Length: 128
Image (cartoon, rainbow, N blue to C red; front, side, top):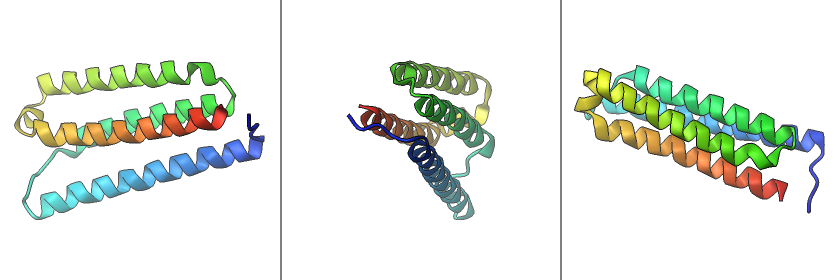
């Protein structure tokens, strides 16, 4: 079992957040380019909501990782995934724009979910 020092944990947290922010910026640029080329025009508010829920989830998971509470990382991940899917469901009911472009919004959701899953797997492997 590899024991990570506090500075190593801090670097893992910073790398994780930096990588997430880079991927998110690429997703926003892709959405902007699709809108500029009139391929598909999506509401940025929905993308921003998914981004912030994922950001809060990852920050919470990374803080728990830094505090060495590996037993609850999975529960936190599951809770945020359920919260995020209910938030998307709520938006789907009340936003007309969402109904018109449901597939692209769920593609954004699945990309952010994939990022979360990869981070949680890497963190759990680092703590084992």
